[in-house]
Length: 373
Image 1 (tube, rainbow, N blue to C red):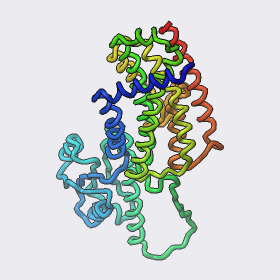
Image 2: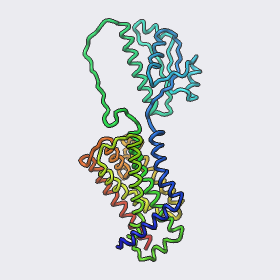
Image 3: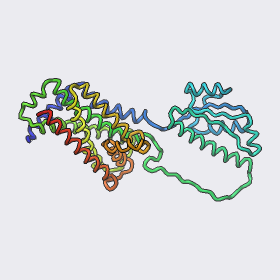
């Protein structure tokens, strides 16, 4: 094996890459755009809950309920409704996130010491958001109940109680950016490595230069190494750039070892480059390669735990996730970023990435060499 021939092939690949304007845009612009989208747009943080009030009581107690919600920074009363028809229209038109209906006997029941019902109707089209909004509403109602109890029974009562002191480790403010931004670092590495590697070989076929490469003194293994090294370098450079933006711009803490992050990236690239080589062997055109790449990307994304928890998936699907290298890389990258943990905890993920990478890359190389021969 001649490293001189490999070096010249790598140099040729870089010249072809950066000569093409479309390739430059994909390599430079797309990672930044994806990071900004996931950093600013995709999040589960609830900063404002728009509510509508239907008050059929018109008493001091009903005003206390409305004041309790308006006093909370998250809730914003945007509509005062007249009847049930207005309530339904407000939710149908998505003008409010929740509606609160208070019956005419609210005050009477409270003054009698009975339980008074108020109806909280949440827009359930986004189930996760609706459950969080309902939980916030229950906190407001609990505090209001406590205040009403003190008003109705002003005598001081001593009794044993439990005081929960809540602390959130690794993400004190529960910001969605802490969850999504480290994950997009992994996704960018996978996307660029898959897409670039699969298209690189197809581009040679479409241009008719693959036969010229085959008749040169280049051995099949040298051709494979020369074709994959540029995309390894590009993926690592992009990972470094996106990591710097995540730490400096989004202020995501990088609590762990940069060296371990680099090693994990290399192991992850074994699998993604192997899949890219496999795609190049089953595709005849760049369009086919791109479509096949996105066919692989969607299952990788959905079954990785990037957005949807793996534990919530059906048992059969959970077993399939063990074949997904992105699953292990996400655990590593979030553990290194947020928790600062090392090999003593992450070694199963590193071992899984190593085994998957070697199997996938070796199989793809053998298939590619067979096609070349």
